[in-house]
Image (cartoon, rainbow, N blue to C red; front, side, top):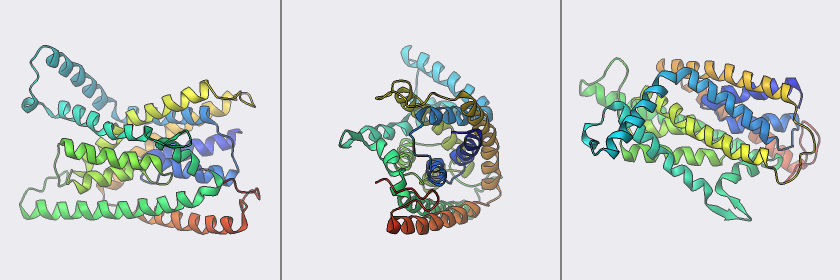
Length: 317
C-alpha cells in the first residue's frame, strides 16, 4: 500500500465511520476499485484507532462524566446505596450503553465452516460480493427515510400536546427496551458491509421516539466500545497471524492513514450533528441510494463478465 492509497482509505474511514453511509461498505468499494485484495488487518486496526481518537476528541467531556458516574455507581452498588429509581441522567446513560452492547455477543454465534456471524462481513467484502454492499447501501437509504418519517411523526405528536422544546421533540432518556432495540440494529449493521451503523442506530432510536440529538450522541458513544472491540479482535489476528506475513509492515502509510482518519472523522461528526439539527438528512438518503444503484449496476456487469471492470482481474468468489 502506498501513501496515496493510505490517505484515500483513511479519509474514507474517517468520513464514513460517523456519517450514515457505512464505513465498511465504502472501504470495500474503494478496495475493489484499487484492486487491493490482501487482508491488511494491521492497517484496518490503525484506522479504527484514528476514528476512535476523533470521537473521543468530540465527546471527551461526556466520556469523562460517564466514567466518573460508572465508578461512583459501582461504589454505591458494593456499599448497598444504589437505587435504580434515583439514578441521574449520566448513570442512566451508563447502564443503557451497557445494555445496548449486549446484542453484539450475537456476532460470535457459529455459522458453519469455522466462521462466526461477525466473519460474514469480511467474506462479503470480497470482490465477488460487491452486490451485497450495493444492496446494503440501498437498505441504508431506506432506513434513513424511515428515521426521518419517525422523527417527523414524533415532532407532530409533541407539538400537538404543547411539549415541543427548542432542542426538538422526543424522550431524553433511554429505557432497557430502547437500548436493546438500538443494540440489535447495531449488530445487524456489523454483519453487512454497506449497512451504516450510525444510520441504523439513529433510526432505531427515532423509531422509539427518542430525541434525535440525544439519539445521535448515544449512537456515537455506543460506537466507542464497538470500535475498541473491533480493533482488539482485528489486532489479535494482525499481531498473531495464522500464516507469516508475505511483506513487512510499512509504518509511514499507516501513520498517515491514522492521522487522516482522525482528522476527517472529527469534522465528519461535527458535520453530521449540524445536518441533523438543520433537517438535511435527505442528503444522505440521496447519496446512499445513488451509490447503491451505481454499485448494483457495476456488480451485475462484473458478475456477468466474471472480472473486476477496474482492474481486469478475475473475481474471487
